[in-house]
Amino acid sequence: MASERDSAQSREEDSAVGYYDEEDDLEAFSDTELGCEDGELGFTNSLNGEVKPRILLMGLRRSGKSSIQKVVFHKMSPNETLFLESTNKICREDVSNSSFVSFQIWDFPGQIDFFDPTFDYEMIFRGTGALIFVIDSQDDYVEALNRLHLTVTRAYAVNPDINFEVFIHKVDGLSDDHKIEKQRDIHKRANDDQVDAGLERIHLSFYLTSIYDHSIFEAFSKVVQKLIPQLPTLENLLNIFISNSGIEKAFLFDVVSKIYIATDSSPVDMQTYELCCDMIDVVIDISCVYGLTDSEAGLPYDKESMAIIHLNNTTVMYLKEVTKFLAMVCFLRKESFERKGLIDYNFHCFKKAIQEVFDVRVQVQQNRKLLSQRRWSKLSMTNGVLSNPH
Image 1 (cartoon, helix red, strand yellow):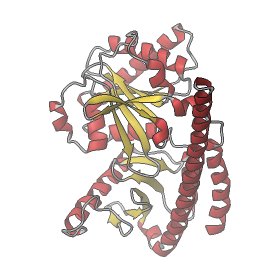
Image 2: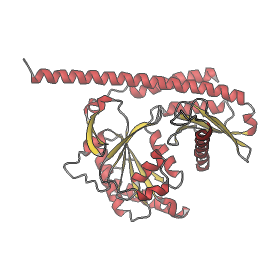
Image 3: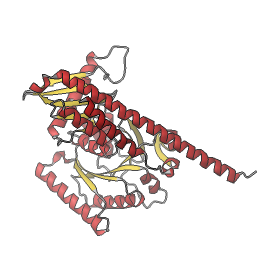
């Protein structure tokens, strides 16, 4: 395992570095960003910190945008979202729960008008990694599809690299057949609008979501994974780990949000994903009771966190801490778990490889930040000389 992992890791690290070796766009560092801080809109310079991917939440009023954000990233109970007030301003939130889950979420009010001259859509779309458009499946979605087409058209013209994601939301009240029918109809109408506008090259991804089950977490997982340059590296490491350990399925989870940032190449079963989320909840709940002293505070999850659950179908679930905010959750047969020593050794190799990937990422981010600061300094000096020739 170690030698195979080392050679694969070396190749994958090179590819991971390659994501960051592309020439930076100076505008990405010099543009200001609109934020919602203390209830007011303000401006921050992106040079003050790491440039993070931006996820936009858009859709008509009452489509469920704010509820999605609160349930996924704030642990709000779905029933509590019934009392949320409608969003009436653009609000930005930094999500930096782990080494690999690091981005900004911008929640847009449903009444946003792209033709309003005060709305600088070019600045917003230019730094966007993913645009999530939420459609209420229990409402008439003709207007929503028109707004989707306008939004995608405007965004693509500014930034063709945006990932366009469509959440067909509030499907918990629909039957399975009705869900599929809705998805097929919305998919066809949206794509027909793109074809009629001559924009066939724009790819829209569609998800059936609800805050009352795990579908919203799985959909967000797929969106976030597209923003992680290290995803091929992580998937390859997971494939090597499970093939050498007799494991059937493995996930790499962000513990706080229960978003899985990577899994092996085998298909993901919804029931399996739900079991993983439930296991993380059990570990955190038990740790809250028995794992913290009165003097401790924060997330009851550390390097000693580990859990084993035996299911009644001879399957074993095994959770191990990877980093402060990441956990691996594995599924394997009871007979394979008898080789726990081998699994733990291979996991140690996997954890070491993850740390190496993270070290590479940090180093490259530091290099990019230093490069951007130098460019900004040169630009400032040049402007200073031009404005004050004496």
